[in-house]
Image (tube, rainbow, N blue to C red; front, side):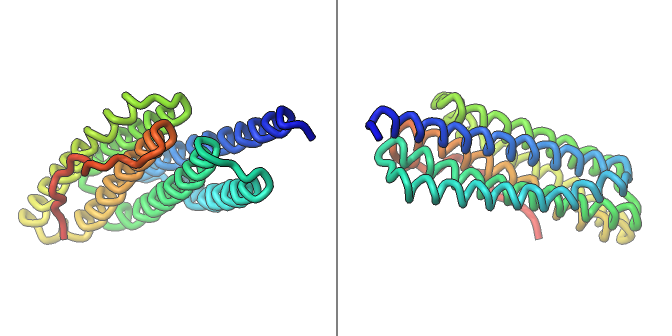
Length: 231
């Protein structure tokens, strides 16, 4: 087998992995948005679809990990090729965790329906979810395009998601102080908001994989962070 043929085979297999990672990203984004819609619309059927669909996300993550390990064992990639495989593995792990957060959000929708929603805060959670999903999409796009400037911007604005979460927490705390009957609903929404803040963190980590891929190093400097409030 010629060196050129080996290179061609590796490139095709890497392209397949990249396509599967992108498909996983699409699935996670859809799950997050559907979970937010289920929460806002008290839609238990939609929430159940999100919970059931998490198994498919988990299975795809396991498949990507297996294929990455196989590619490293058979092709022994080095330098930028090895970074590409390792970064895809790390991104798949981050996406799987985001899928778990979507499932948890869907679980909370039924509990909040039973307790009674705080409509303004539920809307805030939905808006926060759409913001982090947009950021997740931008991070994945930056990786596919190897766009360092976009990845740096995502990393440097991570604190904006922290600020959204802190604003939600203060809003929920006000509801709890006004009426103790709001405590259960507010606590569930606070938990959901915290999960969405973590999705934002994963989006930032995906952006950092773009920088690792293109430069060979993880960013040395601490990214800007806002102190997180909560219980």
